[in-house]
Length: 277
Image (tube, rainbow, N blue to C red; front, side, top):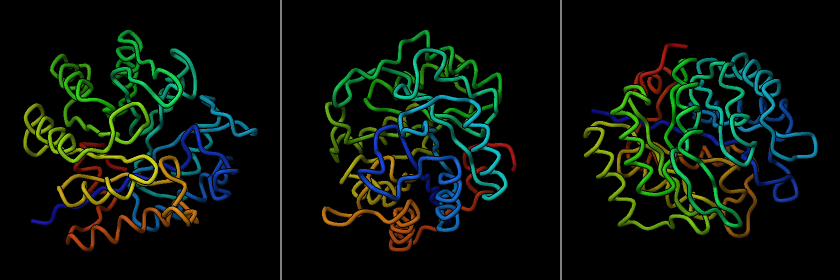
């Protein structure tokens, strides 16, 4: 049976700037255009942050609302996933856009080190974000920067804090957090299968030059893949990525090599247990 691969495009993030790559979409209109091109290339999930005009991170619900409206108009059926990450705000400000009821939102269930700081996700804030997601029927993508985060997501699912059809994303290659290690990657996959079931869907993201490595590992192992300028602004050491779409196209080529069809928006929604568009 074919196993469609869901491709998530992480379009902007909170760290890269146009000085790193002029193709990075900052304004809402740039983000809509960049996402549309990635959608046409094969992406079915957009992982979205918003920025201020000076390129600094923002949690402004009004910006998220305009982005959501534009994406729904120009990328019909695409799964919209908002970031509740800690670089964009503090405390409950991080979830201020969840009332807009996007299809999904990222949920980091534990803390870990980042390159120059501690990425703080205290239990009370994680519980509040999860409750807001249940209130507004937003599916969490549990971001695992460490093995303990997979087990924590499983505990939250068992308690009903994360709804059925849980979805875990491994994030590897962040400096001072989990490096890209094949043995660890395989153990992560085995842990998801043990805790959530053999058929549980999962995704992996690699940071910087490791984006391609994780794309290869994920597609080959039957998982789903994330690409985009948030995680890497380059195609290789010497070449800036010309667009988010170019990074998505690279994943599509990997899918073709492994004889995995790229999931349509409708297929991705069924795999993830999401409402129809």
